[in-house]
Length: 185
Image (cartoon, rainbow, N blue to C red; front, side, top):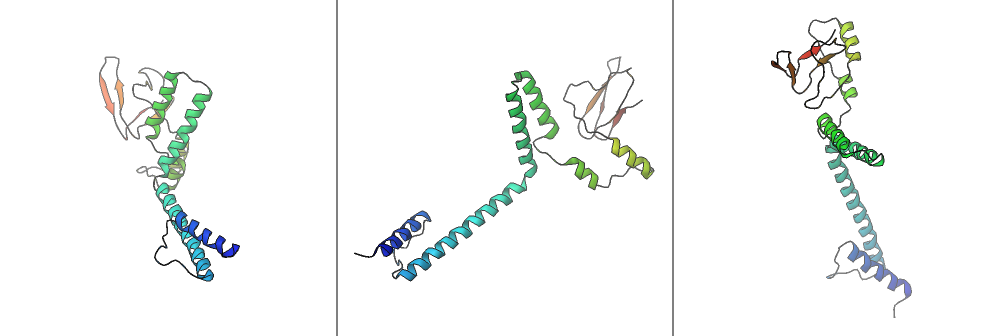
């Protein structure tokens, strides 16, 4: 026998209580003003809760942004390979390259290296600047041939991470590791 407005208000209150998992079974608001103030506080509370969850989620995602960037980039690569219907063996080589090159993370290496102070012992600063501006990052897969003995070298290679095997014509093997270099003219 209550008015339409009062019935609507109580129905809205019940719906919000159930939706937000707030139980007012013991002492539900009695007057209309209490009812509307309670619903307003429910909306404000739910909004604050949603903002908290959103910020917490964003914080957790930002903790490993380099992995997320890698996953996004690799999804694009997979879509590209699928769109162009690349053969399975080529897809596997591309997958191996990305795994070996990025190791599950992508960094803005140019920006990072630009902000690092790299030092070459007792070298002229102009020489160091000129040399660093010419360096290019390359990745090789295991068992790739980089250069063969006896060929004229056109590049100098610095091993940042990994191992390179040098095999002579007499089939003797020498290992080069991080920080080593080879090649040149």
